[in-house]
Image (cartoon, rainbow, N blue to C red; front, side, top):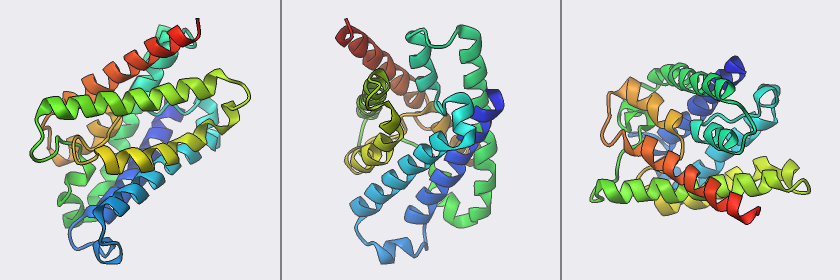
Length: 223
């Protein structure tokens, strides 16, 4: 389980953040090919979510369930689907994978540094409270949909398909506020290699609060 989550999270961050760097890094041809920032955000969200979906469908993902996100693991723990010891193993794997997966991003050089290797920070002009609210709302939405899809056997096989669609919608709407992390591991990795820690606590508290609220809401619906 540890190594499956490590590998899955490492792949998610390496591929997903490489997309961010290519789409928004300085001197990237992406800006000329696709001048619209919102369009690039939508494509990035779709491909980032699609990467997570493919990992979930892979042998690596099937070995552990492809949580690749500490708040997803917390949700499974809250619903008594995994025990506390297993939860710790999952989270340690995810955080280790986040660090390992972002190290290769250094090869992007100046282009990567121009966007802090995809580090999430509160958007310019937005207070920390707005970024925190953005992370709560987006994570609430993601975890709610995940819980609903997993809760009904008829749609459970289609669960991975929600992520590219969901993030292609959420990223253009919310990225300018908080960066649309919804995943503490996703935010940790690039902060370590870039040294950018502005509002780092937002990307822990926001996703965990959003996931907790989604878990409570879905548990009440199930009664």
